[in-house]
Structures are given as structure tokens and as C-alpha cells.
Image 1: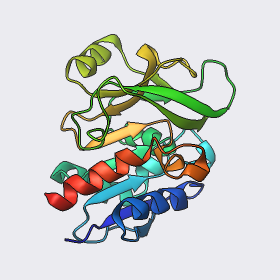
Image 2 (image 1 turned 30 degrees about the horizontal axis):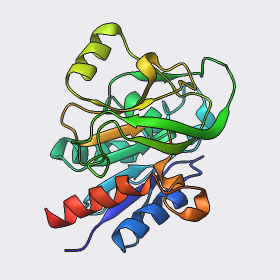
Image 3 (image 1 turned 60 degrees about the vertical axis):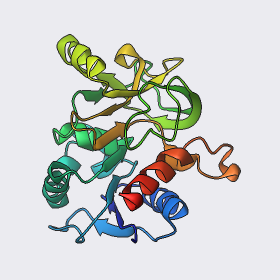
Length: 225
């Protein structure tokens, strides 16, 4: 069985090639590239990725305009059908703005852009995306964002904590995110958004490979399935 992944590029995306390289490294198959203005996704996709960057220059709110791109209607349909969707950084912001994930991403508490490696704790290792890790494992993943401060009301936070939707947490909160949240799943478990960039930690030349397990586990589970 071949693995078919798509990476969506929006005006202002700058991590789409990195994401495609990470997916190809994990699967051995080139990722299909999709433009935000396309109305449809390629058929028989196993995985969809929304990469980091600054879609539409982050006008209005980060991810708000991209969430209304034509391709997002197709992404929503595939997510509803159960296709795994990963949104990283700006991709995470797009997924919350599109209503595919709970919460919102606000400006960093420091009001400054943050670009460094962050230590994360794996809170839920039972998902398709995180089963390559152990629960409680500490991993180093780069962050690079200005609007990564995760916010949700207390009822939502209690619910997603209780249902295991919080999958990554900062060990040292770098952006003011509530409850140190770095990555969340949807209730069905097939949509993951995270501010840190796992695609920037898949090769020793990157300074670490802690992000690779996310891709290899997802690819392995989907190909075997």
C-alpha cells in the first residue's frame, strides 16, 4: 500500500517544503502539493498537513483568512471522514479558526517573536500522531512564532484535559499558553494542532530528531491499517 499525503500551501506559507520533506522521509513517498485556492484535494489521501508560515501576512488574526480558503472546505470534509490532519504553527492557527480544533492562538504573552528549541512533555501517547512516544517522555522541538499563546475558556480546558485531547505540554511555558498547552487533538482524535515544529526535528543536521517519531508512527499505522 502506498502512502498518499498532501501538504497545503497558502500565500505566506514558509514551512511547506520542510513538511513535505519530513513526510517523504517517513514514508518514502513524495507528498502531493496542493494550493489553497484549489477546490478539491487529491483522491484517496491518507494524511493532510497544514504547514507553518504567515498565511495572508497574518492580517486580521493569524490563520483567519486562510481558514476561509477554498481548499479548507475540502479539508473539513476529509477530517469529518476521519482522514488524519496535522496543523503546525500557522497550520494550528488555521485549524482553530476553521473550527476543526477547540481554542484559539493569541499573541505571545511577551509580545515578542520566539524562535528557539522548547522542551515538551508527551501527555497522551495513545493517538495516531503520538504513539511513537511514551507518555511523560520529554522531547525537544523547535518553536518559531509570535501568536502561539493557546487560549480556551475554563470549561473547554477542563473538557479537553479530561478527554485526553491535550497531547503536548511545554515544560517551561514560552508563550503564556493556558495550562502550558502546546498541542491538542479534536474529540475524534484525527486532527492534531501544535505550535512547535516537528518537521524541523527529523534529521541530525537539524540538531535533533525528536520530531521524526510523530511522522513515522502515523505513516506506519496508516500503511499497516
